[in-house]
Length: 338
Length: 262
Image (cartoon, rainbow over all chains, first blue to last red; front, side, top):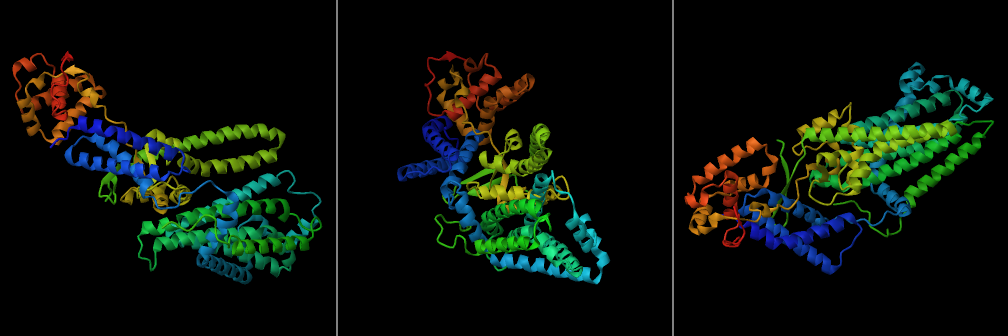
């Protein structure tokens, strides 16, 4: 049977056009909320277009009209059946003080796992450099770390001119972008069932452990703390949180003990991944500024005690922020999608 | 096995499908986007050269940050603002959509773009390309993690059925019994071929157009024989117009009376 397409289209066209106009308005302004009457009308128009699609798919091979209707129904379907919370305007403060720390706390086990891997890497790096100091170029392949720590400290403390003068801002920008790229890679490697993320975290730990043991053995623990703590107490947790995000992704991919489909599991963590990585980027911006403008200055320019005290304050604030911020009931839900 | 379309069955039992984008069109869209990023970065560099006269330090910092923001943010920003499209995708008629037909969310856009870091390994999207080639729905790792697919956007204009006769008189309508027989003997597929030939006639080369309508006219003449007074002097294309008009406008005989004879 061939449907009378002309009559069919002429009869249904006003409803299709009305639905299309409503969709255009909704898509142009995602914050728009429909009234009850508008919602009922929208639902009616969607069902009518869906029914028309069913009719035309059954009775005619005419592809143009079918494609048009399929496109219309698919757009309306997304609006009608979307159950995820429709976000309002972006509220940066609410996001920073509420959504981000709550998201972090929702996945504490992944964070602890990330910390454990980093610590394991640090222990390995520390033991390795203690056992074989000649392995320095392998364990921490950076030119400024190749020197004897005592010699470096002596040079830094006796420097007459500011070696950072004239390129502090550029150095800060390079640190921010480099560390953010490393963090994104650490997250993204979660797609290797977590193996890549684990390697990144472990390797970071190895470098950190090796540097710490190298300086402590040379009797430069105070310099080390004064050098690393102002930026490290933010930068290292940021990388660990990126690892947490990578492990969340990996756990969703593997799906141990979960009966949900892969798509459902990934859908459930996708929003949290985006939240965490934006949080990591923010932390790394701060760490980059501190590292370029403060960490590279030592005694006698800045007393080590002052730098260490700043590091301790930053760490306390970070711990307090991640542990307590946003504990009260959120004004808008930020639970993961299901 | 790779499928050609994303099919979704609604709770109402309606199935609709959207054609999936192929690897070649996606690669071309990516190449356009890469060129756009390169142009944006080069404009930024020129600007930073000017800033460099004032402060080389600030210029370098802004250059580094600008490159980072453009290269990472280009895809995210455009796909979010243009509902799943970048410049490349727009040019190639592609769109990123939710794999289950829902509204595309910002975090999905972020996730699929961040995962480019892995898809791009070791270079030139080897991992992403391989995954996309092996995946049933052509998803790279970023699409899998973000639960998205890339579709081709069909031409969505309403079909213009007024073109069938373009206001001309259909002499075949004088023979309703033959018109009924024609409808009875014509399958939906054959009807669709006749209609599409009319709707897309301007897309053909002149010679191909003549040959196509000659073949179609021969085919439909074999189904029902209209009297010679109705067909004499009628070009093949007009013959097919009349046939399609009869098929798709059943029950409206006489509506065209008084119009210009074909």
